[in-house]
Image (cartoon, rainbow, N blue to C red; front, top):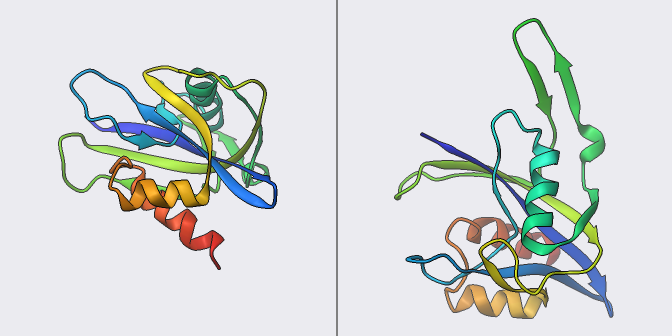
Length: 157
């Protein structure tokens, strides 16, 4: 079985600094690491719907904008209905305990943030320096690490 996930890079600019929402994953029997909001999609759920649901469950925030959402094309055929949208990045596990594939979207959000979400704690806006420190200390989720590194690389250009 393969798990299909959607994940958000929730960004804002505050005091001329880029910030990203990160959260501490708290599941019994798993290491506590920081990660990006997101999770497993439901069967036949649209990516945008799964993303907004997961972000709400884990952060309490409402998605205001998804970058590239205007690129979405949905086709309805006789056998399949298909959604195609340009994500920020995609990942696939190529080894490990869980076979998973997922896509990342850059989002802007609004509302009141939860202190704790669905299996998460310490949900907060982190300056890029804090994100880099967590990466350097190897305290970021192995699943999200490549996308975070890509994001850090992109914003430093």
